[in-house]
Image (cartoon, rainbow, N blue to C red):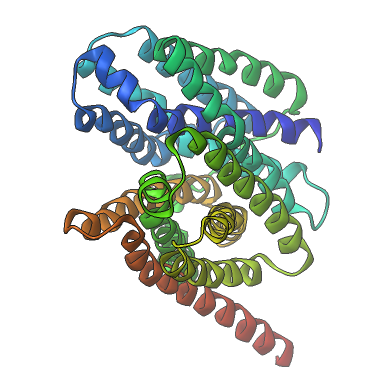
Length: 389
């Protein structure tokens, strides 16, 4: 892996820890701040709101700046947001700091994807984007469990001081390992949105929301499902979640390589279909610990196997608005996560056991599959028509 890709991956590692560690330490924060678990959960929502607000806002503000400077500026916001959050002990103020910490998330992925592709070898664009995203998967594999451990045995503040401190390493590596790159041609404010007048970008965005949402219907409740339904002990869940993180790492890396060899749309379509089949199998196989573990591994692999193809394809379908498009994928991811968590919780709230959370996910994943399939067929027939002409 090139040094430039490693620098970009360190950024997504930090962002991944900033976003996902919160899910494992909610009880610690709730106890320390003397608030309910539900109130603590709003800290997750505040970060997601920061992603949704910050992605288009920061990209539009920074569209005329050199790409490397934009990345460095985003890392500074990451550092400030997480450091302020770590040292604050007031719940209301912490909500604001979590929102600030989420602001650079989508914009970083958008700009980082462009940089990764520009610096990649010919025909290796999707692999380069997957390499950047690999930091997020490693965060789930190692960083989040480590941060949860530190929070449980020491303090959640220490966890976020460490997360903020990673920002210094990210800043240094980007400054040293990424060459100076000129700003993208400025298409003006309205020009950034022109690509949204076409159908193809919307098919990719819909596939992203539905695919992510479908998997998160189940994954949002994977901990209680694996313990109360499948039969894993609470103590074993750290190992189970590390195994889930390994699925994310391998799914992302394998998808990147296969997308370069075949095509991002083919791999994305197949992965969406596999995700729907996996969720159905998860619902039907809770009586076997071994099968449930394997299916969880495949499910989390699918979650990140579609990430690089989606990011790459939206960039390719957004001439003049690449920076905004790369950021919008992260907005779509977060919308999918929120929708999935909500829909997956409906059967549980009605008294059904946790495996029923996979059922609405199947519908969403099938919708994502059909959206990706429609995109692939449009590409195929457009290409065939061009050859005839």
